[in-house]
Image (cartoon, rainbow, N blue to C red; front, side, top):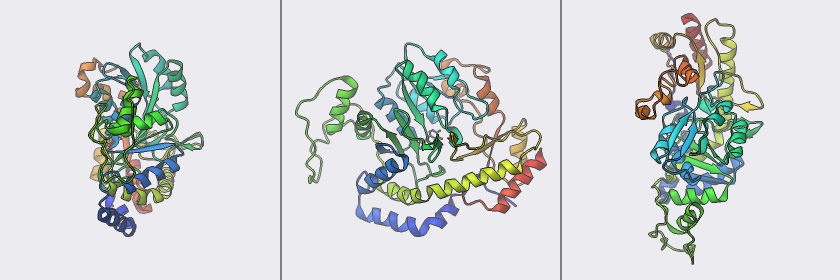
Length: 396
Ligand SMILES: Cc1ncc(COP(=O)(O)O)c(C=O)c1O
């Protein structure tokens, strides 16, 4: 039996009866960018996560850049982050002119080792950027404690972690800003690119709203005051009934065009209603894998969810010595597997200029050589799950 690593069509077929009318309605409303569907989805997400502000943006990479800028990280600053993530995490830091400073990860959960943060702080450090990799929460409490002691901001990359929880509270409101990706393969996936930043800080939220729209209008002027301390007199809101915003063409800071589409927001609102059920199914799959693979020699399973750290199981990552051999064998058996991540970020060629070498961050390097992600998505059948575990066991 062949088992796909991921399959988007199954979920689309399941939800087509709800998705298609919602997409059609938003298209017919012509609220294409911003507008009522985006406002509704932002409100739903802020309620779901229990956070004051949710600001829809173009994608998860922009979410990171905007969050860093909204926390006043600037060119020349340093941001401490993890080498075990998707490239965008560190790319966003570099893209705003700052420097990623990598600290090694913990072997058991692949996340930033909080004990290493303090030693990486320099006078140029402005923020710490952990990632909840594979949906498993990072140790935000310990990281935030160190950051607060040194006056640093914390931005968490939760692109893979919607629905994950720390001590029973969903990730999304713990840090100065939390960034999200709704890339189609995420636990909550759009029908295209989409992203978000959540925050409990009113000022950060206003700067984010300014940055996503070219630093324009009243939000732009407030953002300049918050970031640069320059006050603008006579600020006015656009009239509520205006057909267009007369202040739109007045720009106060350099921003971006990074807005959420109405059609994506409408689709995401539909999917959000199913997210908890889908995440529960992922949890069941993880429990099945962990049970079926228990005691198998030569394999380390990921940590199970606990009330203190509840994963949303974006990936189920096992560790084996012969990663390449296992991925090739699974492929021959028709079983899809993910090699996340083949190269730690500090050894990516794009970051060659930062001066890291092989051996600089040994745990991340070791994990990159060992990690195989097994298929995990809510629509997998029991037969498919069994086929995966049989193939894994027969290889080992
Ligand atoms: C950890 C992480 N950060 C950032 C991103 C970037 O998100 P996007 O693809 O929406 O730009 C992704 C996923 O793609 C991710 O997995």
